[in-house]
Length: 302
Image 1: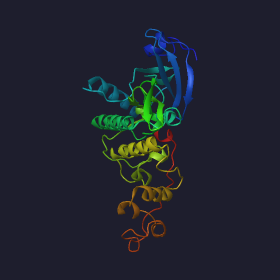
Image 2: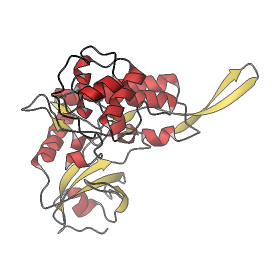
Image 3: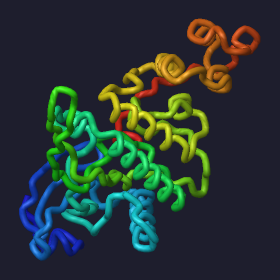
Image 4: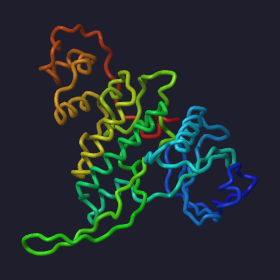
């Protein structure tokens, strides 16, 4: 895709980059890679599908994060926003081109399993990133392996001694990561709690699936799911179209759900899936059935 100065308001597209190669696409927009001619660095350009305007909420989130990154006293582990503007009437943002995402790392037989200290480093960085977003009044809502990328793909070979001799293992030189896709973060202002569906099903907190009020802690639940997968290469929770199955899966894997979740289900469902919870026999069946839980990653952001 060739661009020129008449097509874009942003400096990167107008004078510092040329041909763009498509990397992927989703409901929100198309992702391209190109090279900044001035710096020589590869960058990513996300062009939104909606012509002429982008939602004021998305634009406001981007500006809030950019301002926060400029004033941050320490590393936030949030993917940077380089520039934004319009091309052919479509809003775009430019981002650094980072390394592999954690899904790709986990699928690599050469790199997986990660050393324990690398998993701990990822956990620390994700919690720091979420803390930073929270300081800006934002919730990411879609933390998953695909949205966590390495800063660098460089690897080293480590030799270790076992009883039967030396063995070699390829490991990442650095486990430093960045949390990306933050342009879709949700603001908690003026409402500190939300009720709509958000995120990807396997990493979605139960209060979102139940359409209960939710806020910043939902990101912590998602981080827990990611860390389990990073250790085991297995999803903690299985994808399902049924909110009842999702709650039963959570209880089977993580322990007893709080009664306030279960008591929102229809009586027959409570008795069938959660017979040991207090109140399943005595509560009137005056609750509405919970809706199907799956919403695509991009649908809730458009």
